[in-house]
Image 1: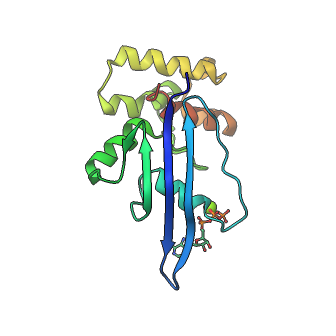
Image 2 (image 1 turned 135 degrees about the vertical axis):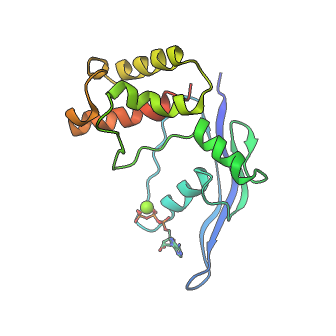
Image 3 (image 1 turned 30 degrees about the vertical axis):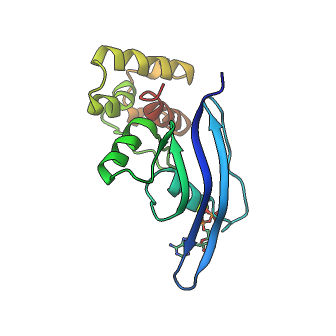
Length: 164
Ligand SMILES: Nc1ncnc2c1ncn2[C@@H]1O[C@H](COP(=O)(O)OP(=O)(O)OP(=O)(O)O)[C@@H](O)[C@H]1O
Ligand SMILES: [Mg+2]
């Protein structure tokens, strides 16, 4: 079964300062559940601009963005914040782990804050993600005591432990 989780219909974006420039011109595509997508293009072609729109942070564009079949355009700021919290995970170059907490706790924190599942369920899911990423044995280590690559994997496990 191919379920569409993200869909763009003719996304067009202009920047106006210092002059009017059309950065994205009717960009359309669909991503199905489980797909891995890379966005590639030369410097300045509009990759970050598109990602800001997909993240729902930038609302100043033409066209339609659907996340899990819901149209983002008409949503309020609070509704978009909820969508981001539940459905979107960002992994930045700088990982923002809390060094004084365990690896497991770091992965659990966003889901605990969301209060949608019990702590036991959140812990079980977080543990599973760590195992899939090959760092299950580090679960009880402090995040400040693991390698750079291991930290990146914790940062990947963190948002994805809320999304299933
Ligand atoms: N806030 C802005 N105002 C005006 N022009 C902008 C703004 N942000 C980006 N641009 C321009 O829009 C174009 C696309 O920028 P964007 O940051 O999306 O590129 P990119 O593909 O992410 O590039 P890179 O690979 O260098 O990160 C560039 O020409 C850039 O100069
Ligand atoms: Mg960029």
